[in-house]
Image 1: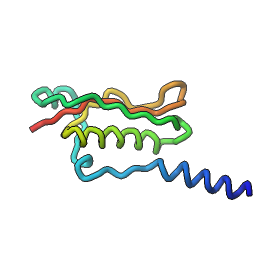
Image 2: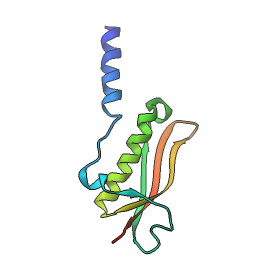
Image 3: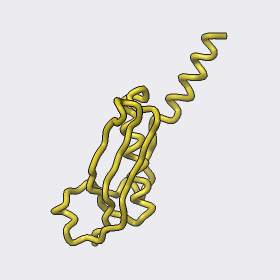
Length: 103
């Protein structure tokens, strides 16, 4: 019974760790402020996860990808990242940035 619980828990944890970007999100590029100086600002991006360091490095990928998907839904072409990491002594992971549409 204990082995079954561990197996089910592992499947649950790891099934939510990796995300694949949609086609529109895959076209979004990371940028710096100079690169987007003539672009239209479309919004702030925030993505958080309660797994923190317990989710491993995949958790940072997941929150980053979630932010990129949000940017795609806003019509962005570029993101200037303002932060990606762990907060609250590792209790949560986050990604934040600013989305821009460049022609």
